[in-house]
Length: 134
Image 1 (cartoon, one colour):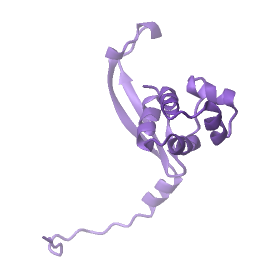
Image 2: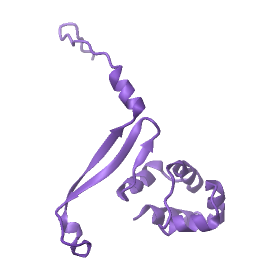
Image 3: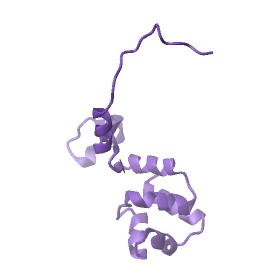
Image 4: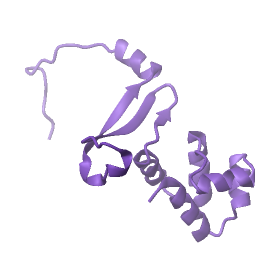
C-alpha cells in the first residue's frame, strides 16, 4: 500500500474529515486532497501530526514513506533511504518487478553524526581487566 493510500484509509476509518486534517497540517483542503491522491508530497514535519491525529504507529508510516522511495531526514543527524538494484530494461514499459534483484538501506550522515564520529575517543581493550558478571 502506498503512503497516501494508507493515510486516506486511516482517516476514513477514524471518520476524520479531510478539512480537519488539512487544518492540522496548515494546508488548504485542496492541497490535502492532492496529498491523498499522491499528487502532492507530504512534508516530513507533517508525519508526526498525521500520526497523532490518526492515532497510528509512526514506524508503520515511516516504513511506507521509505518503501515509496522517499528520504527520511532526521534534522542534522542524517538521512535514510532505501535503494533498489535491478537488471536494466530497454524501456520503462518493458520493466517489471522480476528484474529487481535487491534493496538496501542507505544512511547519509549529517553534520551532527559526522561531528560525533570526529570526536570519538578510542582506547585499547584489555581482556585481562575485563570481568564477566553473572
